[in-house]
Image (cartoon, rainbow, N blue to C red):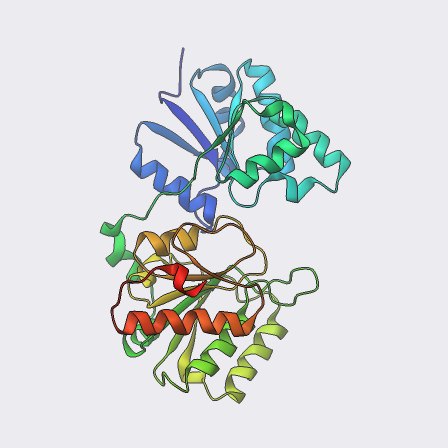
Length: 330
């Protein structure tokens, strides 16, 4: 008896909260009704029993936290069928390489995989540098699905009137985003809010109506730093040029209205935000901390002068509505 009738079962987090994996799975569910998507965070013991004993289709795990990897490796042993793993973001090795126990878990877990999906050649090579025996399992496939533009009005309805007015009243309009204001090693600002603020200060001399919409999903983390940045904005007299868009909301309708998306992160993976922006024909300027999607204009990480130069060049080209080769500004 087969309980789950689907060609594939995809398991991982679903919204809320909004995140790269949860948004992808939500879109996958709509784009492929023949697939069954289960929310890993809400699966009951009965769901697991049905999955192990009463289903024979391919199971695909999205995400790679320790407990998930262990659980699915044991699951494959009991079920006597391999599973597949989709590695979203920076990959397995960066998270676990320094931990011998962690690497043992990863090697054991990947042994139960039929396929290991990664989104870039360098991530494939990263795994093979530690585990060359898995070369036949690794498949390069970008886990990205564009948003359904039919949902634009319903997403915009979740935006405050202040945010909508800000977008309408500022040009050029820049957009950046962060989940929360995190640190990275010895750099205080992982997402580069400080660079964005400085960029607006410099651009305002030539573009008085420039606006930066900075989407911040969680504004309750590192409140002292957040307050410091807001004070800096006040000291620069650019309060009217920067709007913080807080809370869990989909950002992609902003890309349809923005002039440029900026991504000055000091570390990154295969950013869903960048892919959404490019898919919606919004130019992107991003740091060179990792391979970026085709069409992205990159600048040297934490180099404010290079960041400003790339954005200014792009603004001038866009102002004249001139097509250009990105190699002109590399």
